Image (cartoon, rainbow, N blue to C red; front, side):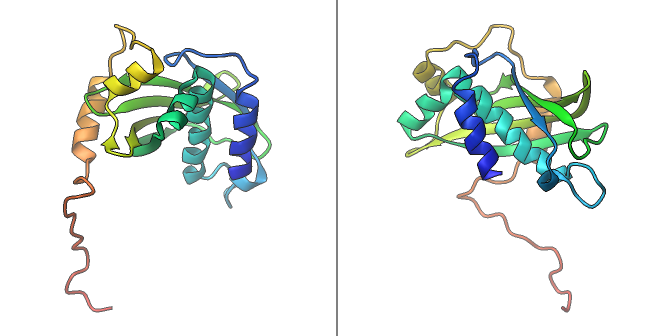
Length: 185
């Protein structure tokens, strides 16, 4: 995947520029390294493929250069995925990526795998940027990129409930694990 990332980063700079709130369409083909024993793209591989789509959008929108200058690191906080059809070896598809919305802390990307004009897989990925001092606010990100969020950009209501229902404690708070306590091994 690292070689695919490098290749995508080189190609993205030559592709047409995008608005940060535009839609990135990244053409791809299912490689042998993407496929599992069932003959289709492995469910976990989709998340790595979606990483490429987000990087394509960030590079083409100029956000990636701002992030590097500021020494901001992108991280995924939560993600949910729904499968409809399988992508098989050597099949052409595209990774469609857009910002679905923002809340007070995070930026949410909606991503899809599309083949033959149909949605095969859909995901919502909740992300943050981390700086040297900790999480970077969305206001700081928009100010640094010189972009304003569209007034009609609204996060789907279900996404807020999903994020709250699945959140783990912050990394500086305890999150004890208790499965299997008292079970002999």
